[in-house]
Length: 251
Image (cartoon, rainbow, N blue to C red; front, side):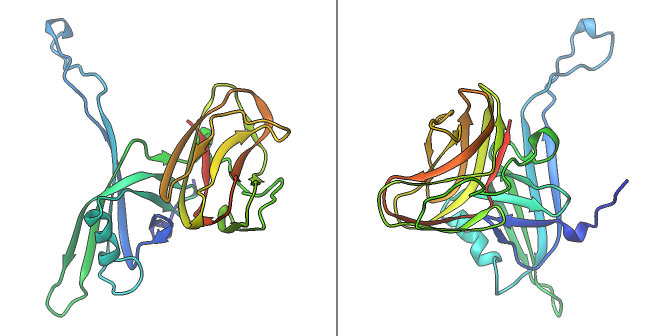
């Protein structure tokens, strides 16, 4: 069995590495409401209740990179973020909020930083049936004036005007399947892009959803089966934007 070095697991907030990390703990839990009755023969019984996931990060206080001041902005602005834990062989990703940030300052020792994140909804382990389907954001075609990718991120997309689109690598889509799209949009100017599942010939095969500046957790429901579909990113007007890593998976 392959072992995982904990040093390789790193936590990112909206695609930016949290600075000076020393450790992280990922917690999944569920409530178990009591369902014991006189018919339980003296054994406790329960039902499965609410589920939740949280991440605790500890490290050194840093004056560079994403550290205390940057993380505090999410609290003061009451702003959600895309939390990514990567490096363990597959990403763990979801939308989250920061619950607590703490700074400790011991005498003649390194100042420490700790932060606790709570996911909104599911925290998805993108392996097995949940594996990321995105491998190339412009794998088929694109007609943006500029469309530059870095791995599964779009580092620059520019359209002077009119219609523009980019079709990803092919994906096998099942009728009525529900798919999540998770990414962070930086909108420099113009129109925000929209996303949909596309049959690579002429038609969308899901709802079309407009992205918003900041974190995006989009739900697309397929209306047809297509073994060679793609995720289509599109604009109908001038735009200048970038996207962090794009995650597409069936739920």
